[in-house]
Image (cartoon, rainbow, N blue to C red; front, side, top):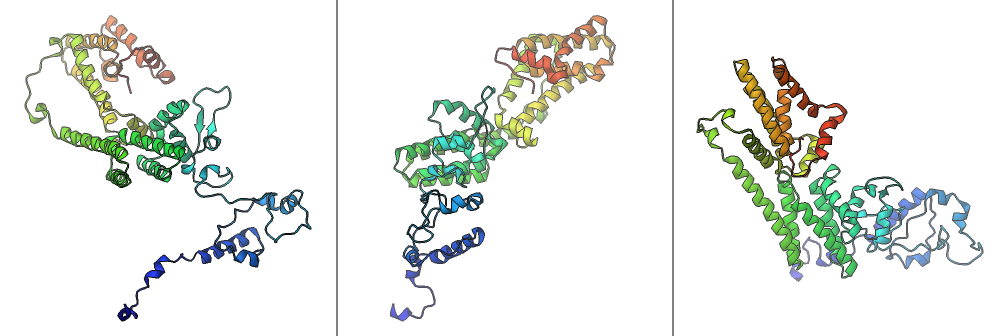
Length: 430
């Protein structure tokens, strides 16, 4: 070691020194003096406490301007004691410990993700007024809404948690939510305290729900990397059961995405130029056609995930709402097909016969509670190209009776009334 005395690299002891805490503390004290007009009241007695934690934040400006706040209520000006030791708001201010965020006062800027006290969480939420209808919670910051949703051990918050998991995409992205939940979980998981352990477990299971309900289009490489890093840390920390649950959810999502890619790569025989000679609509019973249309609609409708609807209302991005887009395109294709097949008939009697066939199909669709195909056919029969054709009087009157359901006045009041009376299962018109 003596041969390396002149080596220019820093000595190992340097890495174990406290990093310039004294200099940073002096800079903070100087800044407080400049901002709040403090005088340097720290005497020689304070020099022995340089390594102590910094004092509590000063009172608000209106308290500084009040003479009562300066002297303190009932304090004897002649009383002894070192200058600067008296509390400026009339009482001794004890600095808050960073490990006890639940006791932080509401007026200070605290990390809401670390709150665990139910009373303080509720104080930061906007609740409904007495006599109002609707949910109890009306609003709050994104972090405090997240924290409130992790109180899943409270039975009265189960519905709130479900509502949060359904609608959080309107104010925060899934990736950002996962980061915040991960931060909150890791904040409390090291503690041996039973209550804090329960908070960390609740937070973790909300995280698992978020992962389980991710759309396949939301499962990005960034989110996968974030989740796998968390699984690795859980394994290293000995939380094998939690790591197993989260890992299984991740792998299930990845497998679903692989299956979707394989399904999209497969083409039907008709797309490859192989198809049997199709029959005409009149070769099949109306109820059979209605059943087949309902099966097609149901297959597409069940693929739609709630987040797709929320994302569509917010961004109208077809790539982020693929199943909703496909369902909508199916409706438009159905309507266009009905119009086209009627218009392609050269004889008026053939057009009339087809129109009556579609009306019969609509009746069976209504019995099956399939409003999607029902309104797709109805919108085609009520379109301008079809209405311009000449129909028999009884056909035109019967068609007009059906068209009342598609009336768009009062935000489709007739359709909404009909939908509210239906017993499930049902395929709605979107």
